Structures are given as structure tokens and as C-alpha cells.
Length: 345
Image (cartoon, rainbow, N blue to C red; front, top):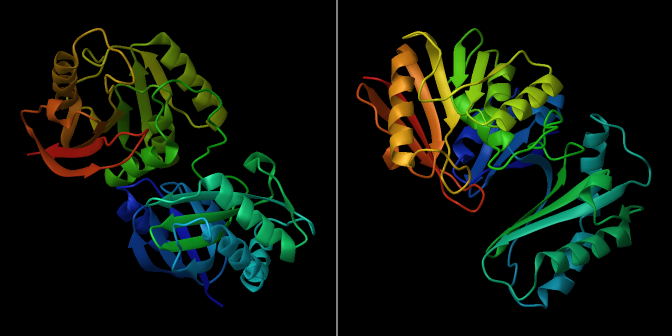
């Protein structure tokens, strides 16, 4: 019997997530909208817990309409959650094939909404939790890290999707991320950059401003020979620590992206989350920094190579011989940076 599922992703990357999801055997995409992709799949598969470009994946429990904005909706949330039991039982049966669950599991609730409300997310969580507990031998915990299961409520204006997380933890939380630094890229966004740039096994790839190494590790997962560096010694140490935890052979060096120690036309792919100015300070003005970094990227790129850069100031990207193939605005850290893809003219 087919399962209805949905994934949540970064705004702007829905098409990328749909492409990855559609590649799974027995999967049919049924819908794509703001921050989400819906699909049917023939059976629960471990591959669902290995999706890289999505933030999380859920078995769909319900599609609620007429979701009101007044406080009277909180009682309705509790009643609707109590009525989820048949769908919950089917979802639990599917999840049990992937990871055995206790007879009395703990569960958390995650809620978000688009559109004005006279109630907040904490009140939604409390109402949903009360409804679920009234019909199931589950114990609610407010701490998602302690929960065996997560009930997700995604409300867009008057419609809500309700699901049960397939994995134990959100998919964008990588186990290898043992060290953090300001401006670190979300792994699911890094994986999306790799997919957009068509990173493949055997390619030589660099990240000239590697920060915590997220892009390098996601590229290495794709089979690329990943090498990167950063002007900040702390970033180099963080990237090396994450690379070691990931168990992938990435090379991280202390360098200046404006003077890369690499031969001309030697690199297949250049991917980077460039300094935005608001997140990471650089010694030169951003205009000069970007211009000099772009010259180096153009110098080292092989004919037919691809460049994928994330920045909130795409107007500062300047290349003489590369053309823009695609630009995608996304939402990240409360800002709207742009992914820009370039190839040789």
C-alpha cells in the first residue's frame, strides 16, 4: 500500500528537493509548494532517512482545511489531533520497519505557521499533544531531543499538513557536525548546492572560503575530491574537526581566497558560501574581496567547469569569461541570499 509523505526544505529549494525525492524507487511527486514537497511511495524505505537536500521527512497523517486564526482553533486542534489515531497506527507500522519503537514511546510536537494568528506555536503544540495523548499510550516531552517520535504541524494560512517524522532526528542535523562557527551553512543547503552544480565522483572541487567545512563534506559524500581553505585559522580547525568526524577525506588549508595555491584550469567545481559582510568580517571591503576572489575562481576553473556561489550580495560577483546559468533566491538565517550558478561562456 502506498504511503503519503512530505518533506520540508529551505524556501527556494523545493524543486531541488523534489528532484532528489523523485529519484527514489517507487516514488511519485504529488505536490510542491512553499517549503514542502508531497509524494507517494510504495513502501517505507531507509533511503527516506538519507535524503540530503531536505530538512526533514514525514509520513503524512492528515491534510486539515479551514484552519482558523482565532483562539477557538486551539480546541479544534486538540479534537483533530485525537482523531488522528487510525493514520498514526498506519504510520507507526511503517516506521517500525525502519527503526523499532517502544510500546509507549515519547513524542514531541513541532509547529509553524504562515499567516497571522491569535495563538502562538507553543499553544498549538500543547493542544496537539493533549489530543494525541488522549488516544495513544504515548508520553509527551517538550524536548525534541528526548523524543522517539515527532508530530509536525505545518500551517499555511487556512491549510495544515500533519505528519510523523520518519527518522529519529531532523535530517538537516548531521551527526558529523561536532563543531560550529558563525555563518555556518545548513548541510541541506550545502547538499542542494552540490546537486545544482552536478557534483559527481572523481571531480576536483574546492571551496575557497570553506568556513566550517559543510560544503566540502557534502561534496565528499557525492564522491568528489574536496579541498578547501579559509583565511581564519579558527575556521580551518573547525572544518578539520568536522571532516574527521564525518570520516570523509577532505583537505583543509589556511589560505586566502584571493591568492589560491592552485594551478590554472585545474578544478572541475567551485562551490562556496561567500562572506556576506553581515555574518563574517573580512579585512578588505566586500567589493574588492569579491572581485579578487572571482578572478581566482575564474583562473583555476577548467573548461566546462561549474561555479555555485551563495551570497546576499550577488551583484558583487564579477566574471569575465563565465556566464550566469541560474539564480535562486532562498531564505536563510532570516535573510534572502541568492545561489548563483556559472559556467564558461
